Length: 76
Length: 374
Image (tube, rainbow over all chains, first blue to last red; front, side, top):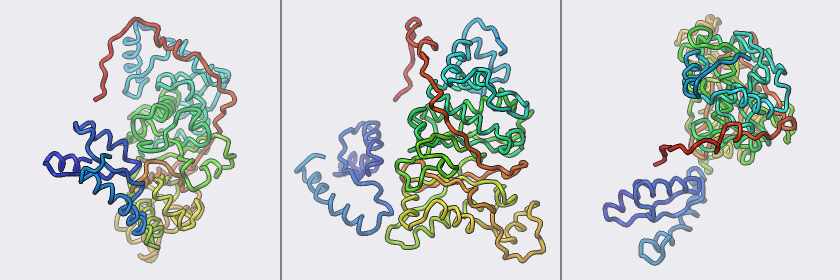
């Protein structure tokens, strides 16, 4: 979250990828740093250790959302 | 019951501190009304003796335990767990007198199992369950500690000779994360029915963090996880490595239990595997100068297990999802060598009481309060 916020503050489009278990923390950090609407995408939890196939599926699922947000086609 | 007199709650608090009756933090003042109401909430006779607490050999009556619970900040909902915890540590095989007196830092870790996790709480079992921010966890564990101090007579440097102690001696309580665990509820291991509630208590050091990142593509993942937990258990500086009895508590986060369950391992399998793997060589014990390992003429590469009985490894799930499992070594000494004890939580006897009225919630004049939230 903080990396994403720092990057966004530097003027570089940024999206935080946040797993479900850490979603509340993402909201907290976003609010605490004064960027409550910083873009973020919810991932299943856990991703780490879930295996290459599972991670590839997560990546495939979220790639369109990332493109969509970065191109301004939709807000998350 | 000894009654003190004070002009105000603030004066009463200073008296309690001065008499050494607190753990150093502020307490809720145990007025006769509050203690009577807390005792009433147990549904038991206030004079009923739950056990005797050493080293002072104080009788832990319901009333005295209720006093500790009030001071700790418990709600009446919490008291059935406190009563069960006192009953558990007063069992002779727990060696409470010796445990309270030792120079080791051991403290009773309370694991709350069964429906009481919800009915007497919520007793937290997820993120930060052993840390601050969970009222039931904090106050139930603190109530047992205050009972051990004020009924059992444990005073640091006088009768409790722990060289350093550890933060779990303030409070050390969490619930099992039964709903998300692949294992049967922990208390069923000790003969309770799933619908029963019980505390499982083991004398424990502070938690030692154990890092492991699973990999669902790695067929050796479970094997590696068992290896790293066993390595932390076998820390050659711990009493377990030297005395080779006692117990070890292993609190696994959901990701780690998933790795082991995916490999088809039961709780008993895990206990057996950890018991077999948690070893030191005789050379290592000689290297660290173990005065307790006496087989010095044996081969240097002889593997010396840290415990003989796999059932003394208390394995259950709690904590948030992530990379860490917690391992708590133990003291291992005393006549019964640090066994695991348990006691039923009796929810049928408990009764609701008007606690807010007893505390005076909402009854006093308006008071300004400085909010601490960000």
